[in-house]
Image (cartoon, rainbow, N blue to C red):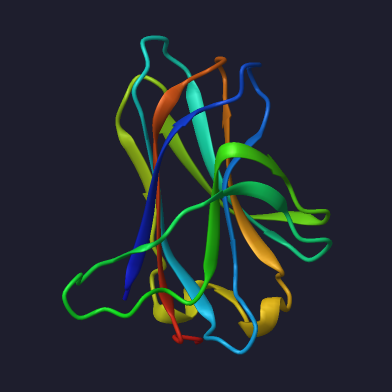
Length: 162
């Protein structure tokens, strides 16, 4: 069950069919594991074409850069602050070194939402405590047209290892 979410308004790469990183996150020392339980993309553009929102994990050197983004608890009255650290592309992100695509979500550039949720809790993508493999997860986009605007949402829980 998701406990936190991150939403980010994005503009995809200025070159068609080119990957851009929009979010990345990691666990921190002596804190909880993170289980990714939702990834969604919704574009709003005038030109028809395909869009992919990807969740990639990284087992090499950790991503760098970006601007800190605070996850929002689903229950704002009763939730503690998230223990994981997340950054968005309001400032430049340098992707990690060893990236493996784990989830691809398709959506139409002209609108409509694509998404992924695990069928059972054990299907959640896990990040272990202390930034062990994977050292981070990164959310990327790739569209058939340059500079497509839209939103991405990532949902996760902490301390829910399967």
